[in-house]
Image 1 (spheres, rainbow, N blue to C red):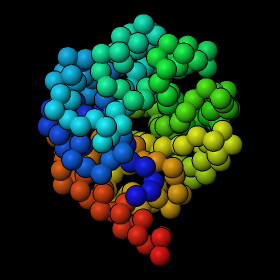
Image 2 (tube, helix red, strand yellow):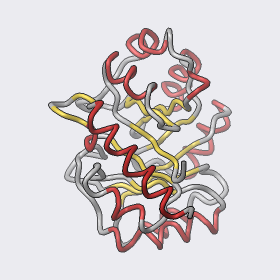
Image 3 (cartoon, rainbow, N blue to C red):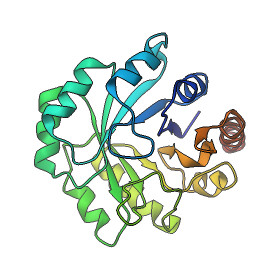
Image 4 (cartoon, rainbow, N blue to C red):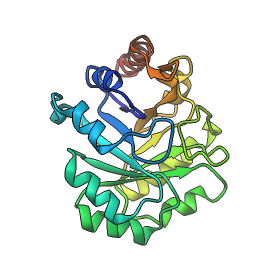
Length: 218
C-alpha cells in the first residue's frame, strides 16, 4: 500500500497492540514531554512480545541531548530517530554518527520551512511536515495549509528522501491529503477516542487509504 503509514503517539500497552495489528509501516513513540510521553521501561514491556521486525519503530525526541538519545536507542529496538524540535544540522549529524540510525526531521510549516529543509540536505533520511501550535511541537490535531504539500514533496524529491504529512489527519479528511500523493502519512490524535488509539478509527483510516490506493492503480 502506498503512501507509507505511520501511527504515532502510542502510549499504552493497548495502543501498542492495536498499531502492531494494523497495516502501519511505522509505529511511533514519544520520549519528549507530552501527554503521550512514554518511558524506556514502559516501552520495553510493551514491545517484549511484539515481532518488531514486522514494523519499524520510531522514537520521537524534542531538542534532546545526544547522550539521552543514545541511551534510549541502545536499550530498545529502535529503527528510526525522529527529531521534532529545533535541532540544528550539526546536532543531527552527531546523533546519526553516534547511533548509526536513520534520522527523520520534523519541519513545522511556515514561510521559511523549505529553506529549513534544504539546510538538512545529506543528513536527514526523511521529513515529517507538521503544524506547531503555541508551545506544542505536534500531536495537536491541527492542520497546516495542504496547498503547500507539493512544495515539500518537491524538496524531498530533490534530496531523495520521503516526506510524510502530519497534523490534523483523520479518516474523514484523509482523501484530501492523498490527492497530493505524499510519500507518507503520519497520524496521532486523528485515530484516538478519549485519548486512546481506536480500533474503529484505525480501520476506517486503513480502509480509505486502501480504497484510494486501489482506485489510483487501475
